[in-house]
Image (cartoon, rainbow, N blue to C red; front, side, top):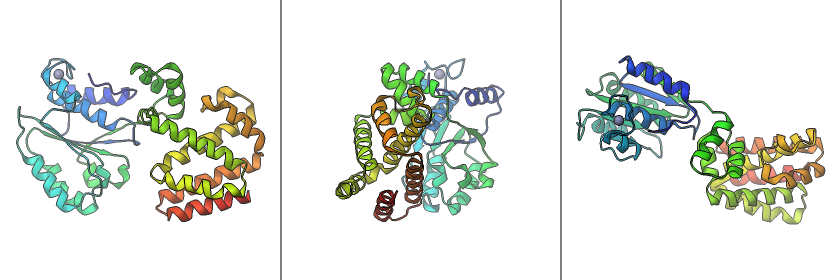
Length: 320
Ligand SMILES: [Zn+2]
């Protein structure tokens, strides 16, 4: 059975609607990156294609294949860039082909918020009159980018962040050891996908390096400027993670400085660094650092010139 961890309310809503025979032909699943939208979509596909009595049974041929991502009548579209009118034409062709096997087909469109306005308008007709027995499931991080005319034709499921205790429970269930499960659930922001990314050894190396570099920055000396700038440039591809690691650490330093409570900190494996830096920082400097990192993160998210944003950040930090 596909485990839609922590999204019990939405699963229950879906099952109730489905058991009453009230399922729509088109759905939107929305929620932050990593929250489980794809898994929820596969759970739905499993229900729709299940051959068993108690759907989704989790054990019939179809349930097993949906779970393993190899059912021929579950088509997954994952666009890298925006989806324009031409792409929608190709997509509509795919939607209109007959199922390979049974009489039902499920089309999952990831990144539906990447469909341009023209693309969405071109897609309306397909949503209004989908081929018989075809279900369309659109996944969107930002539902505000989807036109009302599209939304009004879909049943919408909104997935939320879950309790970190639930994230931990999930990590333990996939045999992550207790210490790591505690740490990464702390840092997950209630999103299982975040915790799973952190299990990657590359992430763990990046985190250690970032915290090292940050400790040096906190005791800034201009000789380090080039080295630190290089570090940010080298990690341009993971800059969101780098900023998140630093911002979480700053938050911990601030909490520790105010409360002297280790158990309030999220980076439980870095207590020595937190303790040490809480002595180095004044409250004022800590707040200023946090402000500058948040603002640099925001600027880079808004596609500001990367190198410029980093240089400005480092110069500003030196002034603090
Ligand atoms: Zn089944």
